[in-house]
Image 1 (cartoon, rainbow, N blue to C red):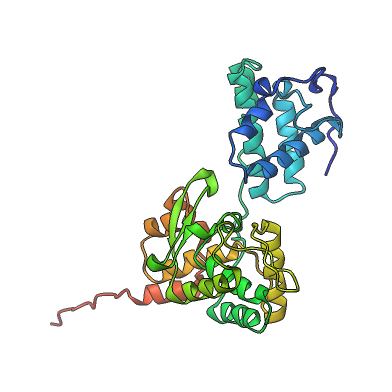
Image 2: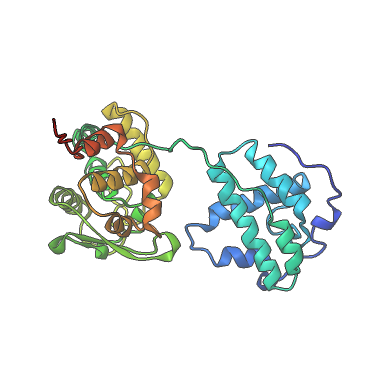
Length: 322
């Protein structure tokens, strides 16, 4: 990452700690959901380090002292090394912190308006991620079934749940009480933005989760739990990182090309759209803030577009002949 050294950093370093109730970064972070705080804190730490050549982190930077010179240089430095979508998220955090500085009367509105008056960040036109095919998902489940340990049964249930569009941060929060086999539903609590929603499982997925519960037992607590080599089940949540490692392991065993946990969401949205489900319903099931976001998850490809156009017809021209 480039170092920004075109100014005196003295004014950017807090001379004494601010109370958390008067610290714009601390206040901004406190308003986020617990799942979002680590990522946004890391973003703010990166920005603070850039601005002071490593002297400050998010808590020791004087955010109210930032000017357009600072924010423009940060955005340029980030774009030189990171994807536009990542930079947009990081700069959003920066603007939110400066907004809190205004609300706390640490920064005046005119200085704030100048500091955030930055060029628009252009997105990469290529869509990230991919959709998994039915054969690939079947191969992943087969790899789980070939594992005779409790972990194999658990991982099949994990894949079944991810298949209905949950984020991995949502999966690890699921508890036994959130699964209702009789009505084929899962209660997702504290999703993105702190929102709750209900998702529904197809019959095969319910069977896979029920198979896991025969091994796990019916004790209250985390639905998906760590399983040790000797078959002991610990009733505590998996971590999002553990979900990632599980999927990577099963992908290697199944000889499936690399994919991310989030690709299950892309697959879920694409398959529902391909089945003719309206975009508003897809957005609600996926926990998206608006239907427009669903378009970013559509990975149906050119074949679907071709088939859609085939449904059109061009009226024949009936020309009279003389």
